[in-house]
Image (cartoon, rainbow, N blue to C red):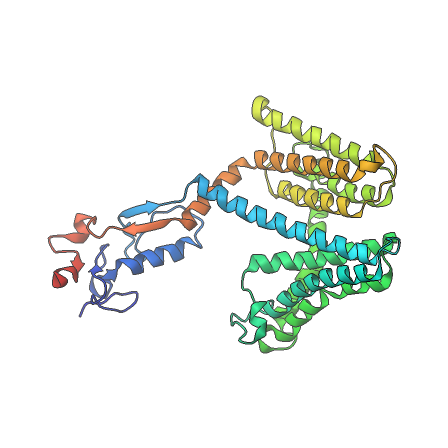
Length: 396
């Protein structure tokens, strides 16, 4: 009895077809099984080869439907808006916590309790999601904790980054004297709980090798990034003097945080951001109309965007400007200038890496497309005079 070589079922529920030159036990297969196998393969493939049989190598005949630029834009914008919404929520919760913990704010006790309760519930929720989900067991909890369980790696990574960022912001607040040490401790100990859950629960073994490596990777990853950047600059120090390389531009966001944190005047940070924004706009103009400079594409530009977004975020959160240009509107000026600066850096990074962006778009198309097999469209060498569909005739 002929059966599908993938699922080992016969033609009772779906006709069997022979879409390639394979013979014997590999002759017949369900079209849906082949299409599922192709989608599974494409989800991990990095090339653009047409779908073909993994045994005989013959290309399958069919229709390849791929999503267009509108779907891709919707996908990217959706992810971006979710990240923006999560960042705004984190900023709002940190602001509530700061307002409740700051000793100079003239707030009634019941208002402080409400602010602590709202921000504390949010921080507890994020911590609980990490504690429940981080030991990757691939088994959902069947008790009340299943409401906090997720297997989405991007969600977990985002919440872990938010937890570490909260710890850093709390530490800077304490050093800067904006909140007292007792209110800083809850923010500092938050990363201990998810990392401890990983050590205690990975694979059912306490302090397993994989768990220890994961915790070490999370803790030392910022140092590793800085070390790799330092090694790259040591090997090629000219990159620090090349305005067409993203490395030299990373200096600006690194210098922005101390300017916002240590100074009482907004003039230095506004000048730095305005000058770098002008440089980015000139770079965009050169990329669009002149096209004579040799811009060096690479990951350093995406690092610039991430550092710029982080510097803008911390700059708006930590500054306490009382002097400079329109100090009464300093919050609005700093936010507007930082937003223009981050957008300019992002636009320049996309422009320089446009070829890589197009490649990423093509790869996304391949991984999210759908291939529909056409069993009647087979090569003569594969089909011969025999019928290539088994099961349809019996039902007819």
